[in-house]
Length: 458
Image 1 (cartoon, rainbow, N blue to C red):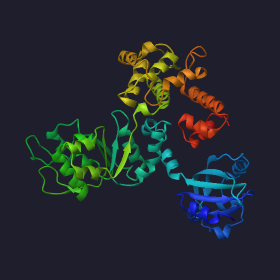
Image 2: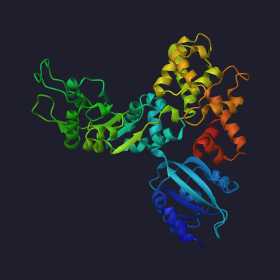
Image 3: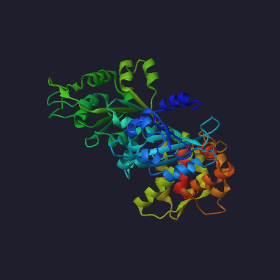
Image 4: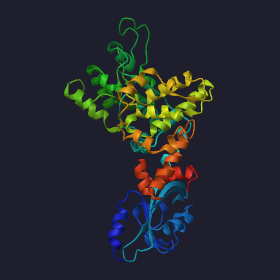
């Protein structure tokens, strides 16, 4: 076939299983990764029907993809690998057009998402799962990297503004890791006086200093086998930065006043809202420790950068506090939604949660009105009343979608109603083009596809 070598080279450069199948759904070619996954070579299966090789539960869907008018389709399913194990996969089917000999063929990309599925099951119903709730691309990037972060013991530095959920991400990683059956210990380096911090971290023996009447194990020892999360590591004194670096290098340390070393079998994750590069320039943070902590890096986006996640989290926190307080509040008045979308949230998700908790406690009816919001955000909102959100003009979207947000059409709105309405209107505005609709909504095509399926909008 013309262009065969070029296509095979491209297929082998893709870090997922890739297959080229003809219009009869027969295998023409596979890349090396898919050969390993299936246990077959391309030569051995060339001309054989795809379903006999991939053993997927999506053969009917492949027929649909072939006759879809040239549009790429994405679905999730499973295949049986060479070890007869069922593997969860995401399949992307792209019709090939305009190349001689390849018309009416499909290029399949088979992405192994089994680790993501296992992590999702592991975190199902936990506070960490709920804390990482969101559809914004920046948060989805973090969520998709969770299995990578959880698989290794390498040090991880989590950055982000106060209230973005750095501690919750650290705990989610711990719960998804091989260390999950051991403790997760959190220490705020900025909340403990410098004179006590060394003892708090590394422990001490009796008589190490005045008032040390008994041995104290310290957080490194309490976290043995598990994960130690040092939040606000930028506030760590220089003296302790040296000792921390030594512990990371030697995997052992001396408790205060002891001449006997203690092993440190822990995974270290650190977090900060401060600019460590600036602290380096100011001589307040050691350069060698910075690079030692920064082996892996995750940045938690601010709530201002997360767009419609504000609405999703509002609905989530409303349900949480309804359950906690035994209330039956149905939703938010449109004026309250409009106002909360304008607000900048300097305290991020933590602040939004506190706002909803305040409103649920104050509200005596079944709809949260403007009067139920904290007074300080109303005055802050007045100063910004003419501004859209930094994350991309959220207020403008509200005005453009009266069928979703209009108070005249319904007394309140909930997140599922909003999201379903936005999908319908965006799909109508783009003439049913899913790629364009996903771009307008700020989602990937696979996210849009899952939501269309969830709301029964196929």
